Image 1 (cartoon, rainbow, N blue to C red):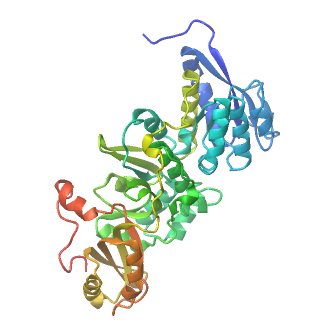
Image 2 (tube, rainbow, N blue to C red):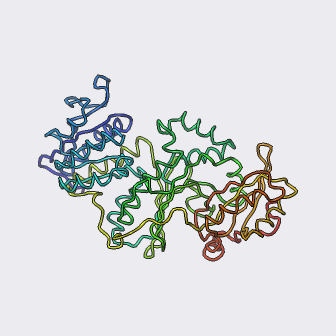
Length: 458
């Protein structure tokens, strides 16, 4: 029999900053689940809302709610027990949240940019007021990754955490594949459907993913590195030819955010990457997100779900509210202190060794000779393919592990190879030892080696 409470429920008064699409859905969820709250001995009751335009009609707001335009007044109100920040931004939102925390009011937020860029201020305010900060909705909305890292894997050794964490760029890349169009047309489609930020550069330049990676690395490794310390590239240079060549070599292109423990320190990178079709990340399409965690004890854990949208975000906010109601001390900050985080340094982001994909415009008759010449430069070609698009013949090759500075130094020599008709474009692969993985560990799943016989794909 389900538990029920016969006494009056404990009332938790909620102040909300912002009442846009996410806030409107949150109002509906609060009303829908109120019988469940009461059944569990508490009631989440909205008391204050701060909005830009207090005169605007908001049909979902219950009667008696105080609606104003001053977020600081809500954060300082005596009849607010928990503050929900949905206003966005990285200036006033930070001031308001830290004011509430300093006076002992816990904060639930979906604002990854404010957290990732001003985390020390949040930590100081939370410690000062002994208040909780919950931010499950800030990273991959409906994937409970913060809860997993904070509790289920608190004492696990983690070697890698990576994933597709920006739904907009993933939608654009998926649309480019399916529609056969170039980046600009796919971006226009995403904007028309409301998938992009007001400033789409936050998505397509990888900024949003870097902010999320900063928070994921904080939870996974116990050390904070701001987004500006992360190597960050977006998808604006990805062309239809790249996607078609990758497909021909059994790969897909995804914007990957990854934090890896290396001998040189913690590597934090956001950039487009070729992902082998046998990998789970290759199957993540449209606005979905996926996060993979690797560690010696559990090998690999994968989480998949909607990473954005008003319902997933509002649902994640509500679940954080319920956690705070059931466990008032529950907090995603500060993080579980790890000895391994002491002195953890950031790896040199320019000194990496990976497998690389190269795209070159070529004369069709000279394609195989170009591959031979690339090999004579000391780059081992593992796979190759050729496509024609936009009136140009493109050669794609995947080369074995090489130091990135060395590869960059070789690009002018590759461009000068007879038959190559322009500068090569490179995209990194998702893993630095792809050949070993395909040949040794995953041959049972993929069948053949990544390496193709001479002439394959030409």
